[in-house]
Image 1 (spheres, rainbow, N blue to C red):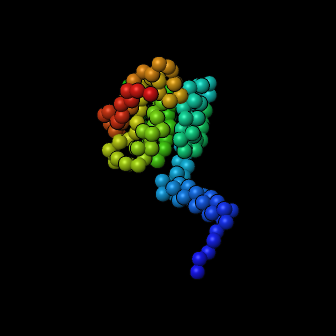
Image 2 (image 1 turned 120 degrees about the horizontal axis):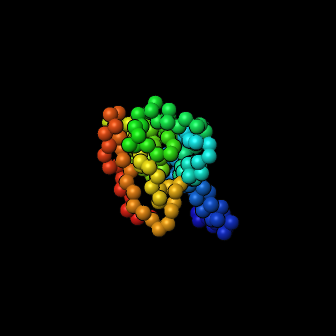
Image 3 (image 1 turned 60 degrees about the horizontal axis):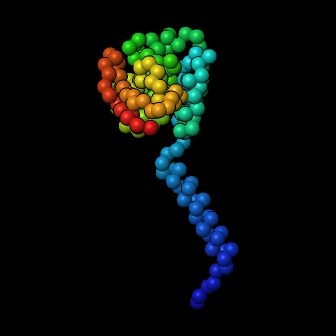
Length: 158
């Protein structure tokens, strides 16, 4: 009992398989949007560019413009030596400055208990949102509740 399939049947089957495969892949990878709360100065363009970078990488950002970002930093344990231009909260962690989305995703995936957050102190020229060329290396630091830092990621090339 052999059954013949038309070209249309085979194309339909392949298209359906591709759609199911893509949907399954998204479910397995857990690509649901990740909520992110960002506090920034209303006139900061590089902060807007960082928010766009995070959105492009699966985060859903709620942005609060404030002229008192320093208060948010103090409330979240970000000392002057760790500070950058904006502060974000995600998954119980503090993200200070232009930290790449990939590093934030790694933090959320591993959920280390001793880390309070990630920071790139200052405003490194080639970090997301700054995007200056040619690429200049920068380091992402983790910090704990006492402000002690450790290297979380070193970005040496674009």
